[in-house]
Image (cartoon, rainbow, N blue to C red):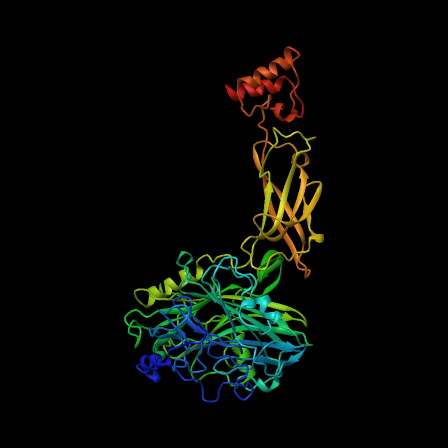
Length: 603
């Protein structure tokens, strides 16, 4: 978003002392020598709710590189403006700068891409295995959802080309009205950009699609939340081993010299909070700010299920945070090796952390237990995931939830922050769904020779953004007996087309066999997406079975069943229709003992 009313801004912001925010190291400068003004976008920000945060198109976010507000720092909370135009009520910073770090091995060659206050990425997609020269249409794209069925926002932004990597990354975002979406694409393929003091290696050859979105939705505790999604694609020619993905931040919460950081290893959260309630800007109740890894990169794991950009992957899991590192201003890494050590959860010289883990400060500040940060200073923090392997053509994925919270004091701010980060997140990923008709099958009333037809319909929820992208030719029903037919086309309640399988309910009853009482009968859909990713989706049909002793199958276990059996045994009455129901003692045959057992049960 391009801000307006700069005279009002300047009058307001001159009240803030420049010394409040920590300055970046002097040898780290924005990469203006590499990136011309034609394609660099440094003045776009998201401000749909109580947080205003900048997003660039070259790996950095949360940093006002263009000096729009004249403060450097680029995450403000609480923000009390409106969705489109700054109204002069901008409050203090909770984060000075943040960025994406990547590091891995190509053979014995260490390669990294760093983003702090300067970075080693260039805007736009890769051009095959290399990079495009400057193009003016490689800016951050922006859209605001107006209606739940709003089309792909990227198509509404301008006449500039929409790059495939960006449109892929924006899939799976719930179109809640009022949701503001920023999207961009960048890569590290330009060797001229690799000049960071902690970088300077050969490029990795990774293309990154990034989407940031937010909405003011108090029902889901989203008014203090921003979501960040990354899609990573190895467009190079080399396999990258021991790849680490890190989210780095210089928080600077209010006054920068009294910050503490920590992590919650059980919930994949890392955060910054104030050392006391006497912050120079936020006293007496300074907020806390932090990140949660909602869905990390996918790794093989038999029996588990992972999510990859809204797609469910069987026999995979989402990797959580594998390390958390803190370092203070002045101990920034100065070489790629030192940066890579930090990404792995090691000290700057490669030695283990003093607590013997890969997680700095994993204690609980609220209860005052565990290994806590006691070095209140201008700190940096970074949560990392790895090691991973990325072969040429492979992709990986990361979904983050960022939040800020302000309670009655510094510790209650941490508790509130964790509550917000751990709150159930709306279904941003487009869920698959299934409907089964009839949803309940009464075996007592179903003739197994019946030609009555039931159906199982499979597709995407009606609110899904991307529609249907599985291959109907690969879909099969597993464990649902014979399928009469399948129809592929528009279906009420599903987005785009859906596929409906039709089957005889009598065959379903037969497959369930003798069932007594109620039970859930499993049905499964297996197949693959159009890109070959496997699908498995499970549902159930509720089965109403027989009761042992219900000889006349009237659904009641009473004296009439004894009368029915007595007539059968002593007066040549009709035999039970369902022998298993009349086999009260489960002997495998119908005889006088069944009647005796039934009498004993009832009386």
